[in-house]
Length: 112
Image (cartoon, rainbow, N blue to C red; front, side):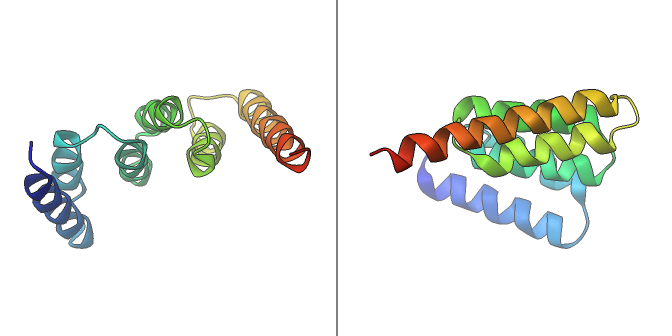
């Protein structure tokens, strides 16, 4: 797909989101979901719709695609916490994993 087509689809997704047509926005983003940022956008839409388990999967995909995408880690933890189907203990564990991961990155960068 050409960059122009991807940008047109992205614009259509944003317009759908702005008009609160979340299903249409999700459909548009699904056509161009090859990047961590698009996966994250889809996760945010799913979380807004209350579909937390699907949102967790999208946030998970975003951090698989880019392990340094901190907002993906954060939103996945938030979704674990607010999901009625997930236990708060698991959310706390995921949050701790995220904090430890960030701590390792900060220590590694300060040693350079």
